[in-house]
Length: 453
Ligand code: ADP
Ligand code: MG
Image (tube, rainbow, N blue to C red):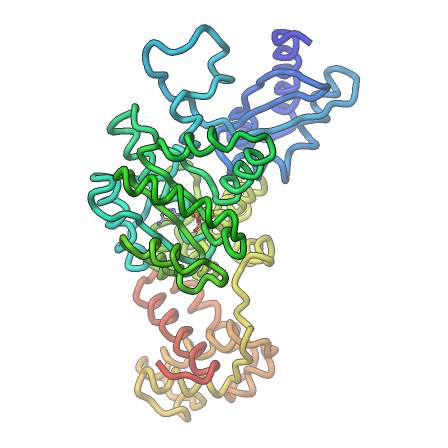
């Protein structure tokens, strides 16, 4: 099918979608799609980032196919891909070709996600050392630290930071040869090259770059021959004063079956760790992301997400995008609905059994009052306030029913519910109360694990 014809079909399908979806949803999720062409009986569509892709695939792909097929009267298959915004071509490039299909010359090799920049990287205590090291390397490649070895758990920003170096170097000088690839790709290319007897080409390709970024180096574990090959690539680059940056899910010395000479080389330069971000950093990341993507999410929900998704930034972002879409689709912003929506993503708060009396003791100690006061009827604020907080926490952190919690505080269920609602409301409005509640939650969790803080 000709491009023009396909485009017409697509635009009529869009009309149909506009009719059935709300304006907000249409603008947010459908208007951002670009029609690329029709090939092998598939409609090829593109969006500019992974968020759109995953949300569309999860929620709208069948609706989109149906809209197309209602225009053509035949079943339609669609394929969505991510195509980042085009970057200006360097001058004097190749002959005419459809712009969107032609990879930019440097970008093709560099293989970088242009959203992974230093500007988009939120700094906090968990990552400021790694960030500073990455920045130093980006500013003076092969002079600051070589290699730079960044390690840390999944979803903590290793790939982002590594690619930020590449993007920075290219932004200063587009002629620099930058190569980003996962260790797995590196391995596969090596195996292909072996099979096709193109080893020389392979070596030339990776030993002639200015900056080599190899992601997830733990993939080398147990692969002797690959380690050998990598060892030589490393040496060639290092001797030519070319910058190498590596990421790994743990310190090199903890990689089993990694030849000691590689371990020692990985530690020649600087080794930095990306840690799990604290709550403030998580909130800052969510704020940054929601501004960047222009999402309208109430501040209280950002807090909620930051609080309940604590160990993986990728999951945090995934949660954000799902919440944004959910709100735009349903108009619902209730915490309970969001909690249900994200039930598989949120941290399990119940991994340790928390007895009510542990909560009472911790809260009483925190406020310097007697546990008995929490159960009494005294009303001065110095006691009523901790009491409400204790009730609130008991409701949040245990599975006990309201009547049973009432019993534990010498009250009825309605008092507990009232306290819960009061505190819930105030944590949304008052920073200080929110912080007190968070601190107490951490103390209680630590106590429940048998530690004290
Ligand atoms: P890793 O490679 O460690 O598994 P990624 O670099 O893929 O993690 O990061 C996961 C997601 O979290 C990415 O979308 C990335 O942009 C985002 N991210 C991680 N750290 C930060 C940060 N400090 N500021 C902003 N976004 C971050
Ligand atoms: Mg990664």
